[in-house]
Each structure stands twice: as structure tokens, then as C-alpha cells.
Length: 200
Figure 1 (cartoon, rainbow, N blue to C red):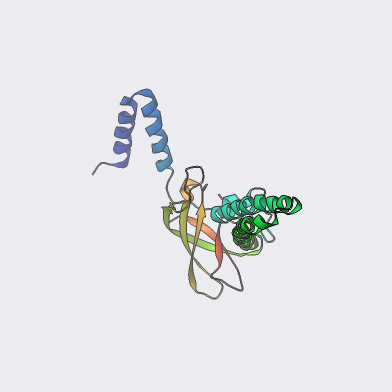
Figure 2: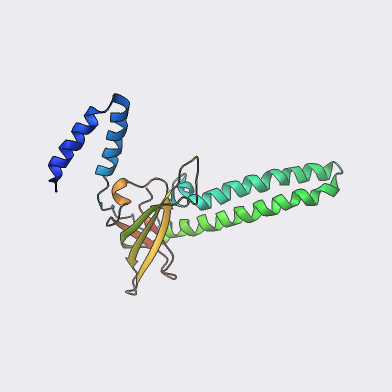
């Protein structure tokens, strides 16, 4: 088996032998994977933690999608319903109202999900956590990209080891590999409910 430094040297020679654009592309990929060693996250600040702009899209892509799509899917038909009712086209209001109802349900799901995660980030109990598995979650795509599904374990104050999972688009390479040490923020009343720190 090649020693690591020899293997790295051979890889570098191979990259340098490739034509310009291809060499740079594969070199970039090599840099990304070279950084993918288990890292250690910085501890979260004390509660109440500040919630920044764009929080929802960073910590719960699915919730952000439901909220945005629900508002659009329900908001536009609602405006149409008002215009139709004022124009005397009341017979078609019920049909358009169906879209408003569907959009409202989707938006509600999104707001509930994001609200729950916000509470965990703001007031959750922080404890050490260990990343145990990382996969690309292909069930969700935004602009052709899918988030990483990160599974982690943590121990709550009652001594029970628990498991959590989050989907994130942007996570530092060293924190999205098994063995990375991160933090879980969990609900002290419902310790099974948690999210992962850091945000990205």
C-alpha cells in the first residue's frame, strides 16, 4: 500500500498532466475531499441566541420551500378571488379557493417547521454531538442542488443517547463527515427534538 505522501505526490503529477481546465477541475475536487476530515465545531453562544437573516433556508430547506411555495400558491389565487368576487364572478370563486386552501396548508406546514427550529436555535440546550452518517438528500432539489442529510447522536441531561438528523445545503466539509464533533440543540421538555449547531 502506498504511503500517504507518495500517493499524494502521484495524484499531483496526474493532475498536472491533464489539460488546463480538466486539471483545475479535478484539482478543485481533490482539495474539497482533502479537507473532508472530521472537524470540531465551535460551541454555540449562550441563550437566547440571535436569529439572523436567511435563517430558514440555511437550517430547514424543506420548511423554507413549503413556506415560500405555499405563500405563492395561496396568495396569488386569494388576490384573484377578491378581484373575481368584486367583478361579480362569484361562481368561479370556489374553484380558485381550492388553490388558496392548498397553499394555506403548505404555508402553515412551513411556518410550523421553521418556528420549531427557531425555538431550538434560540433556546435549545446545547450538548456535544457526533456525526454518524452523511448522505445527499435527493428527495429535495433547489436550483438543481440537493442538501446533505446529516445524522448525529447526542446525550441529553437524563443520560439517554439520542439521534437527530438535519438537511443542510451549506456545511463546512470537515463537519459533514462521520466522526465530526458538532453540537446538538435540544428541547429540554422533549429531548428527542433537536437540531445541529453550527448552522453552516
